[in-house]
Image (cartoon, helix red, strand yellow):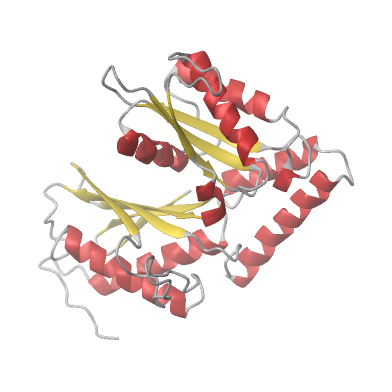
Length: 310
């Protein structure tokens, strides 16, 4: 592979490339501690030797083996969704070309990760169904760029499985199907309806990312961004925090359980945010994440990782 040139400050893009490859390895094979802890806590709530109990045991064994062998914990290695925050201005000396330079490094990291078996080569052209081989193409991977005033790069990667992505949904209130009006009770009804419809198809126990408001696109985007929060955090908005706790309790009383086999552990977490909206629209967007809640990140400064996230 061709060695990349150094930037004006002597910061090596090669080092950043290796960091992205390591990020993908960690995200694919090593589940964050907060997620593993939540699954273990769910195990304690299930009746010993029940199907739910045994299912969670198998999930924990799968997590352990994936970490030990540095192999993907799921056969669906998911859609890589990157959140990249760059110093302002975006054409920073960290990477020549700013956002376009970062995009090129990420694409190369994806290809190397396929070669190293951290990701599966399973991206296809939508119109022809042809496998693209190296997992790069129009729309893949998904990369979101932001700016901030700090002088280092921050990157978060989420690997979003297809099964759980398929059961995400969006409601436009009022919605007579679930008797939901334009209020928090209506929002609650929509979210619980989404959980009930998902059943085990989203590889439960799952985690919900929810956005109230916005337009159709921004609402979905924010619901997915909510999944970047740690499971053990507290919502800064007390009203939304109370709603999160209510949804968790009500969902885990539905009896859906791990993989839909029944039990008390249907959800591991609920994260809700809100965006401003125009009066004619009132959207409730629900992004469902499976138990393989794969997200990792890093902060990068002076040609090295400042710290790993999650």
